[in-house]
Image 1 (cartoon, helix red, strand yellow):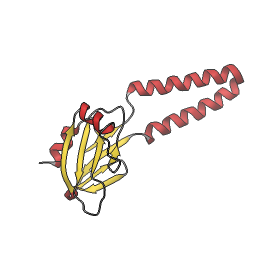
Image 2: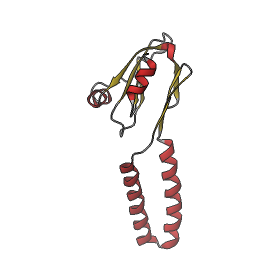
Image 3: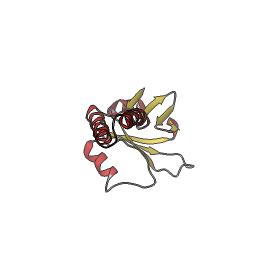
Image 4: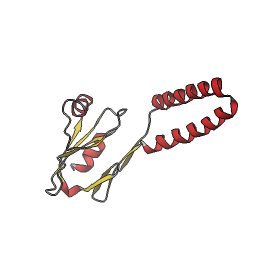
Amino acid sequence: MREVMRWPIWLTFLVICFDLSILLAIWASLGNMATIITAIILTISTIYFYHATSLTLELTSGRLRAGRANIEVKYLKKVEVLSREDMSFHRGAGINPQAYLALRFWVKKGLKVEIADPRDPTPFWLISSKHPERFLERLNP
């Protein structure tokens, strides 16, 4: 099972609008050649950040992977789905600095995965997910 969280349409549109406003300012002050060079740089950087800021959540053959971190399922103690309000609390006032955070601000729901590995000082993972119920079903059969 795999879920990839990329920018939503509204965020993509916002970034493109920022890019266009930068291009307009460059064109007005420096002319066409500087605008073309800036357009190329902005296009490449926007595409790069679109892919670099995506979050992949994957559950395959006994391993859970969230972003760059992964753990064997046997080391998971408790998995719970967090509502919008619970996620907001854990991202704000209830944040634990020792927890592993795989969050994207545009995804409002998620999972709290408690870790049972005695070698790992991380108490839990807080993971953004558009469909946390699907992962809960697979992790808690």
